[in-house]
Length: 508
Image (tube, rainbow, N blue to C red; front, top):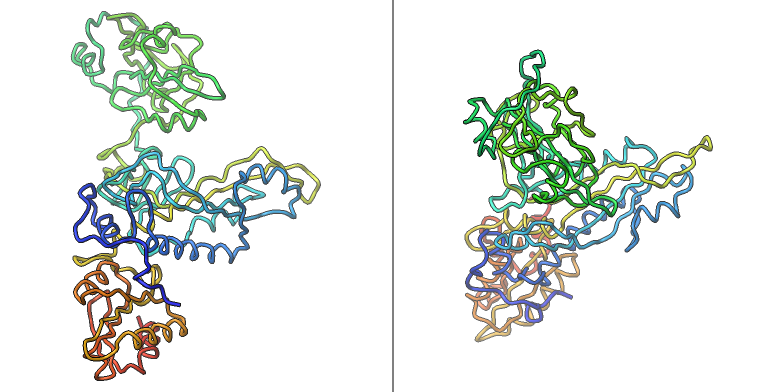
C-alpha cells in the first residue's frame, strides 16, 4: 500500500524557522522531515534507507547484530580461539555529540541516530580494519582527515563544530586536535650557565619578550593543567616553545586522561610554582610533558617559580626531565604543512563518520599454536542523522529538497487533483496500487487541497519523480510526470507509465 499524505505525521511550513541558518536545515524543517526536538516520519525514512545501505554493505562481510553490551565485554566471554576471529558486530546507537550548532539544525544536533560497527581482530593490521576505512558514504563533498585515534569523514560547512587543517599542495588533512606542523630545528649552540633575571610585571610571553628584547622562540611557555585519570587528579606541567600554543586535546589523549582542565592558581602554588612565572626546573611530584621541539631548543628563557623572576639559558635534559616528550604544539591556519611546508588552510566541518583504532584490548585469545595473544578492535561510528542532514544541505534548490534516488524517502510522489466533472480519485488510487505492485515506493497525496498547495509541497519534499493525476490529463488518458532534479515534464499515456518509469530509472 502507498503511504498516504493525508495520514502522514508532520506539517510543511511556509516560512523558515527563525533559529535556523543553514539552507539544508531550513528545507528539512519546512518539508516536515525534522524538528528541533526530533525526526519526523519522512526524515526517519531517509535515515532508515541509509541504515539499510550500510547493513547491506556489512552483510557482505558477515557482520552480525548485537545490542546493548560492550563489544569488549562480549569479546571476553565469546572469543576464546583464533577460529572465532575476525568478527564484525554492529548495532544501532544514539550518538552524543560533544559540540552542537543549533543554527545548523539536524547537522549540528547534540543527539543523533547512528550506527556502530566493531571489528574484533586477531592482529592490528588485519585486512578487515583496512576494509572498514572505505565506508559506503553517499555522494557528498567529503574530507577524509586524520583524527587523534584514527580517521574521520567530514562534511565542510561554515557552521561546522570541527576544524580540519588542509594542505592544498600535497593533500594532507587532519582534524585540528590531530594536526601536525613542520618544526624547523633551531641552530645548534652550546648550553650556557643558568642565570636568574629580574622580570617585573612580565606575566605573559609578550611581556617577557618586550622586556628582555628576545623573540618568542627563545622562550618556554608553561601551561598547568589538572588531569583526572583512574579516579584521581594529578597536576600536569606542559611546556611548548613561546612562539607556539599547547594542543591540550592531544596531550589529554596521549596521557589517557578522562578529563583535563586548567589548573587553579592555588593548585599551581601548592606544587611549588608561581602563576605567570612557572618553570619545570626544581619541581617535584608534577607530571612534566614537553613538546618534541623543546629538547632541540637550547638556552630558553623560562619562569623561575618566583614572582617577577625568570631563568635564562634553561636546557632540557640538564635542568629538568619530562615524563612525556611528544608533538604537543597546536596547529592553525597558516602554519607550515608537516609534509611539504606549504601553509595550511582551516576548514570548518561536521564529522559524519569516524574509524577509531585498531587498539589492543585486555581480552586475549588462543592462536593456532596454543599461545595466548591480545585481541584488537577497530570501531566505526556513523552519524546517520548528520549524513541525512548533509544530503539536504548539498541536494536542494530554491524550491526545496532534491533527494538523490538512492536516499529519497519515496521513489514517486503521486498527486491526486480533485476533479469537477469526473472522478479522478479512483484512477489515482489504481495507479498508486499498480506502481507499488511494480516495486516503486509511492507517497500518495490524497489530501483535499488546492493544486498549488500540492505542487508547492511536492517541491519542498523533493521526491525524485512527481506524477499528477488530474482532470485535464485524464480526459486525454494521460498522466503528467515531472523530474524533480531538473524540472523536465512529460505527458504520458496512462498505460505506459510503469514501463516508462522503469526505462527512465535504468537510464538515469
